[in-house]
Image: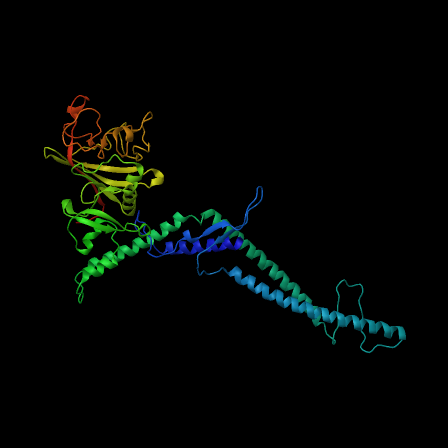
Length: 453
């Protein structure tokens, strides 16, 4: 298990070293296409578990090549020294057997009264054992050398253990198995690569000897949103494939390339009432409708697009009298499903009024998305989505709802139609008995904040 912790910590250390080499722009997170991630790490039980028993677990790591710390070299060196020590001990054991035989011979000679030639004095008062062999004390030196080596190996093992404990502590401290951290690192790397490719492609439009540049750029460039369609020279409205995050694949969007400088990714459009927006959570999550007609792009896709870049939001409104107005927000972001697609916006400008931030009690900023079957609004005694028959970032309940029912004529009663609370003649429909305002065309679209037409 310690080796698993060491390998994991070394894996993340390598990733962090890659991260230190450079990071992408703030808020930019893409993933390198084809790159492996720590999602390949698998932790599962190695056998069956019974009550009140510890379960054996095994962890599977992806193939990788890593640089081991020097402590592993010390362990290898220690093993070699232990093997040498074993051989020395065997030699010493043989020497001791020979020494015992010589001692027996000396005793026999003493008993017979013979004088010994080159006799040896045995100092019994000395606690150390001195063995004379061939007239020298080489065996005694070997023992002392072995003691020195054992002390060195003991110190090396203590150091290695300290290093391993330090690495394990670092693993717990940094939470190195956090997949989101790894994804963020890879996201920033692919952002840098994409930015470099885009810069090269824009600078080399007229490179000498380049006969057909546009098809080549189309293969080299990852199109993250409609604003990058202009890099390959496309200026017509239509449906295009975009990849805001390679990890999540590509999907189709409708691009408005003509109005207000172009480069707009359309996330919602109402033009004739052909598509019902009284839909459940699952439909708003994945999107519905026809990209060439009426549609809702999908909350998952909106989240990915706003996560990839800093986006601005533009809302276009037109009533049946032909009056057109707009609302623009300099900051626009939609969270993921775990946070119920919470809306974040600020920086209003325009002519339609700031209905999304109408007042303290009617403010759609920082509100969760609700649908008729999923109540996430701030109204304590009912469901705004069910009452107004649509999905939206309801407060308690609303000062704007662009996903309401499409009415082709003015209507009375419950205000469940397309609604923008700051529209110019709003005061005339205060009472339920008055006619409600209707809208002929509604469009919500976004574009990167740093886009230059």
